[in-house]
Length: 573
Image (cartoon, rainbow, N blue to C red; front, side, top):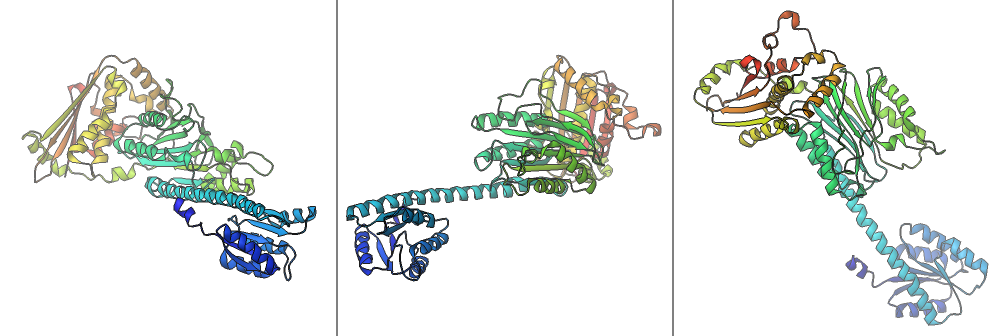
């Protein structure tokens, strides 16, 4: 910046006066102050020379032939928009009207003859000091603009471009300034479920987005590793609390969509209500905020929990930021929830909810300048796991080879046993998958193994240790009751265990296979009907689907010890 200012040390001045003598006198005084001086003897010539030389200072007479000083000043000021080129009227007219017209024409000052050289130089220094300060402010603004553009490229190209499912999830964002404080994140869990986050940092602009990178990395990495949505929320809250200044926090809504279970999990922390719309646009659920924004408290409130809802395949979950609900029109009226809900009804029926709502907000606002960032996310509830399970192909022909490998002993094995209250506090799935990834790396088997491990562990904990009856989930409404009882029993859990074991067998000819063995402290269950269901029980029901899914993904599944031990074998074919 200093170098830029030094380049201005040899400034240019333009003197516009029909008196040749006055031009000479003023030129001498200006040159003594370090200026290079150009002169013009009428207004038209003065405008032409301003365009040609772009001087740093203009001295303007009032009464001149062809074009007077007022008109020449108006034209010069219209040509110098965005720049402060000081213009001072030098005149012998000492009237109040002349002073007013000079200022209204765009002049930055007036100096009435006669005046001493000292007064003239003092006036020039004063006006130039203001001009230099203006130049510094402008350079700072340009620097901030470049920073904002860089940050916007980072947000658009690195953070939001990595979102999952952009061909199906409707996302709209309108920034109030170049850089939005809103953030939309989507990521897929190893089992095919989808996590979505709509966040709104305090305020808007560049400052409001400093937490975007740690937020997005935490959200994506933890989702990819298979952590539960509540664990991700807890980590994000802690991270933002320690990273951000006290006046900067994140209002956010988190959603986990499991199309396999026909269930969504929602946590609203400070954003407007989010909605579950049916296929015909009716509101099935309106989920209000139940928690302060992320980063306000060091720990989540003790009663914090995910809201759980059963959904149908054609349902939609819709998230909005307050920039939409609080948009105003010329009368100062707020767009509000009712207008939003009416527009959403039309949008769902037209199958373009996001566009319909934004058009409705724009029509309501009547081109009033936007006060806040606007964001909306429209999430369909169906077929998120289809791609994962369609990747599976039967490898039954390798099963015999697996039995041979089992007799040679594992290449490596890994064990973890959780007991009592640790079962309520520790999620062993990401730990186990991280161990597997560290040794064998991730790949096409990652999602299938995650699903197998998750289903078997959850069965061992829920049905074995907690003694929950899966038939509660036979109706859609029973899901919430099931998870309520689960939370209650976990809080009181002091006894029991679940033991996980991985055994990896390897050979050059078959690549190898992995055996997942899980044992629990429960009483066991009648597993025969789940492993080989009779025709009468093959109708689609909401319980028991986990075992059926595991049967599709692995090469063999065997229960023993009255159902308290299960072993799944998966070929690395």
